[in-house]
Amino acid sequence: MYAWIWRRLPFGLPGKLGGTVVLLGLVGALLWYVVFPWAEPLLPFDDVQVGDPDSGYSQVEDPTPGPTAVPPSGTPTVTPDLSATAVLPAG
Image 1 (tube, rainbow, N blue to C red):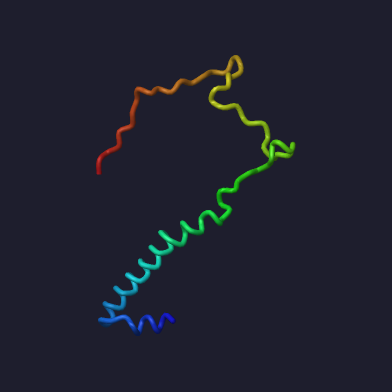
Image 2 (tube, rainbow, N blue to C red):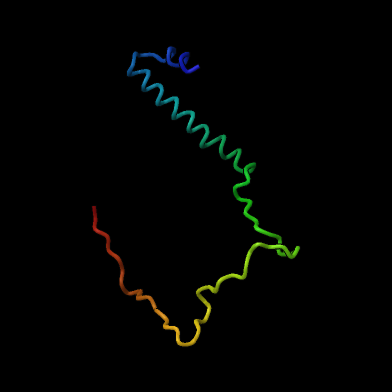
């Protein structure tokens, strides 16, 4: 099949290479904008449920304390200095 496509592309070697790049781009765009959006709801990539809390089974342990948790007494607290900003060099 690829040999048939290669023989049908016009304008010698430069035209065949250019035509190959265009055909690959068209196939990639067709997959990216048509096939993959159509197939996305059919794929299980967003099904990330670990357990059902209502059934009593869950693999999720007790959550770790978040940023609102009070540190134990005697633990030093660090307040970030928000006045300092990072400046990246241009270029």
